[in-house]
Length: 75
Image (cartoon, rainbow, N blue to C red; front, top):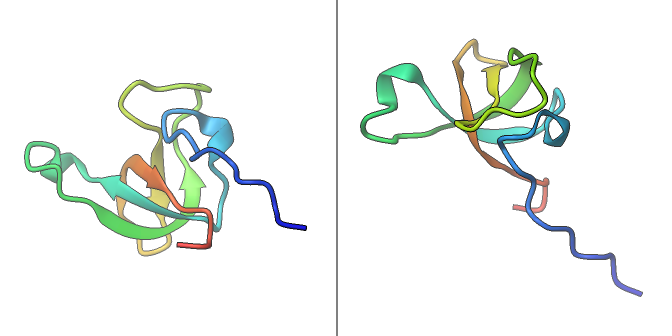
């Protein structure tokens, strides 16, 4: 029996995130270029359940940015 295939997590919804998962974020200084930084979520900074530009998080290395991609652990 195979595990069910889940749809990709929506980086605009807070419920898709939790501490310890791997994500790509865009820092404020990189918004124009769209350059992303990959890291592990240490804290979720956005309080609302949805944000159209992505939920803001702090990574374990201290980087703060808005989530663009959420990785499930198999990537």
